[in-house]
Image (cartoon, one colour):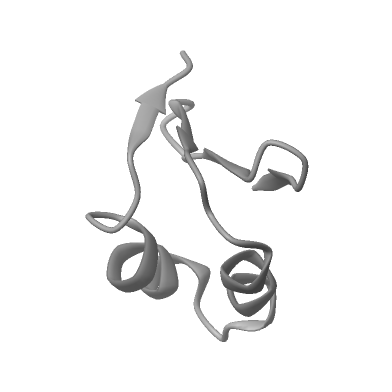
Length: 57
């Protein structure tokens, strides 16, 4: 995962190789994800369905 604070874009690279950008994600949400015990659980409960996304590749 990576985060562009200027664009508020969270980029997730899945084990399948798919890459998705989640849009307008606040820095505080990214910071919380970085320190979460399970990145996958955080992604599924706090990111997916909460933010618009686009598939990159």
